[in-house]
Structures are given as C-alpha cells and as structure tokens.
Length: 261
Image (cartoon, rainbow, N blue to C red; front, side):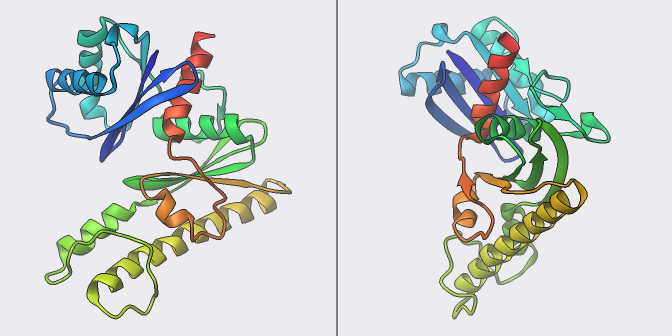
C-alpha cells in the first residue's frame, strides 16, 4: 500500500492506496508547531480508525508547499516506517515537461495537479485548484506544463472581510439565492460566492483566449476543478466541466508509479 500526503497551507490531506484504489482520505489542519511525535500519533490514529496495519504500507510520497513543516513529516515517516518519504518537486520525473521561466518556483501542488489531469483527461487542459490560494494551471496535449495564474483563495477573502471590519460576521458559505440579498449574512455570502465565480470564469476566459490566439490551440479545452470550494463554485461556472476532489492524491499515486517503473 501507498501513503500519499498533500501538505497545503491550511490543511494536510492524507490517503492510502491499495494499487489504484483509494481506501480512504483523512484531513487535518496544517500546524507549523506540530512535532514529528504528534504527527506519528496522527498517523497511528488514522490507521486505527480505518483498520489499516501500518506494516503493509510500502512507501510514502509527499507534496508540500509549507517548507517549515516538511522536516517534521520526514522525521515522522522515519519513525513510523523506518524509511524516508519520496518528495515531489520540479526535478521529479513526473512525466510532464515544465516550461516555466524558473522551474524551481513551481509549487509541488501545481505539478501534481497537472500530472493527474494530464493522465486522466489529456490536454489541452486548465486546472483550477481552489485552496488557500486559487491556482490556474495549463497543460498541453503533448504534456507540457505552461504555467498559469494565482489568485487569493476564498477563505483569505472571507477571513480578511471578517478580520478587517467591525460589524460584519464570519459566515459559512453556501449557494446564494440572489445577488440582491436582504440581510447582512446573505449579502456577504452572495458577494463572496458570486464574486469568486466571476473571478474564476474571467481568468479561465482569458487563459482560453491566449491558448487559442498565442498557442494555436483549437477545439475543446478541458477545465477541471479541485480543492475545498470546487463544488460550491463549479456548479455555477460557465467553463468548469469536471470536478475532481481527489486530484492531488491521484496525482501523487501516478507520480509514484512512474518513479517505481
């Protein structure tokens, strides 16, 4: 079995694969102060809850965008499994070519997303990952990662609005019924959700326009969404046609399989 770990700025998502089958996923908060011993306890709890014997885990592969916590995860893995995990970065043999001005600046999460979409849908494809930041990435038909755009995530906007205003409450986001809301909670909800739908669709429109005009791409362009708010936003998007909640986990598995082959 394979343990996959996606360490994001807000949450860390773990999963265990038995070959191509995802047995379960487990989400915990990314905490920079968490020690390797605390992470070991987290893994023990995760395995116990799901009835998995840790001795059947052959390897671990990690994608991380929070360097300050990576050492703790590496140490945790050595304590749990007596081996180092595989770390994904721009030098990893992922099966796609990184056509970025400075390849080392490409986050591991963006590489893994691109690998997963390219293997599942081919190209040209646009990947929209709605995490702490919203990343827009492009992979071509011949497996070339072109780059993309980065925007502040929905939670950043929500926290900023709540933290920087005196009377606006923090709310749980949901599908808004109207842009002309009749109370403060619905007004905030409509502003954030409808606003981000417009932001996301606007950037997808510009990316598709550039792909057609500057790269000569014709025909259909896949637009795949993932991340915590993907379902909330994607249902109203004019461009997103696929939602993949486990995209990062699948990408890590695919990269691992390629490395081992």
